[in-house]
Length: 385
Ligand SMILES: [Zn+2]
Ligand SMILES: [Zn+2]
Image 1 (cartoon, rainbow, N blue to C red):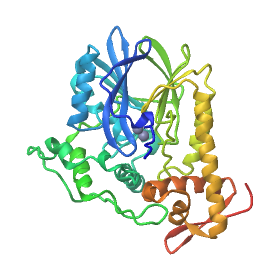
Image 2: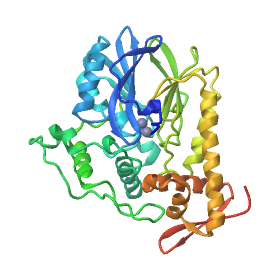
Image 3: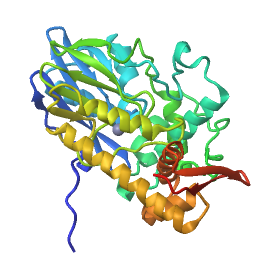
Image 4: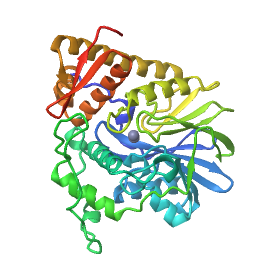
């Protein structure tokens, strides 16, 4: 039987440290998430020490790998003066709080950054509303759960036994609302019990990534001996941040642009996340002389504009598929529409969330109508678009 070659995002974390651009090191940390084998922690070197971007998942295994990579590169955790987190997913912020605690590093995120333990800035959100809190909770549950899981990519309780059985800390297992109903009205069972316990434990045990600097679009940062532009790129998450060095044309693209995988676009907490995503894809493709993409997963890539074009094409095709499916089915729920366009092995809340994002975009573009029936959101396709 032919086995398909692995996509570079799926390769297991290599121990090799590669200088991918002058004073920029690629260090790979292991992760246990569906469809991904590693996260790239970039080390940006200057005469003051090192800054790191996206220091991996919470938990002891990732932390051990992080320390060993830094050591191979000639640094200690104490030498880290800055941590940049591109967005609020656990494989990107997991080690950030712990580094900051040990080294006193400044911790930089986009202004809108928030997680289960970090509330967004008052200016951007006001106090976190019940509704926003519920959605963040749901999104965390979805990331943890996901439908596209290969069995050996699922973290097990054993992977984290050092954390779980830490008897100085009480692991709380009640009072958190897992599951419930998605915004589009299907039941969301949440992650399996083992995963829930693990995630709960991590919530109470890890050092929360409290930003010391919340940057805005077009702010400048000095790292690796050069000036970077902060580029706010909502879509994959609301708080996604890319960094761009206009002199060399280097883009730290986070999960906004990946080399072979199309990043997940969540329908959970943005009114039209696909609109933001498509617009900010164009934004990065148009950056002056952008010629090197350094993604959070997978290999560096050269033609950023071509990659952007391919990702946009994928989303336009997906909307066409949904439109045809919706015309054939008549009025349909998000779940039934998602099952028309995703293969069975992908069915679940992640696929529905991505479908919902596409349907909301069709709705806003006048290509679909939306109404509610028995607590479920239904879509009907129009003839425009
Ligand atoms: Zn992400
Ligand atoms: Zn990621």
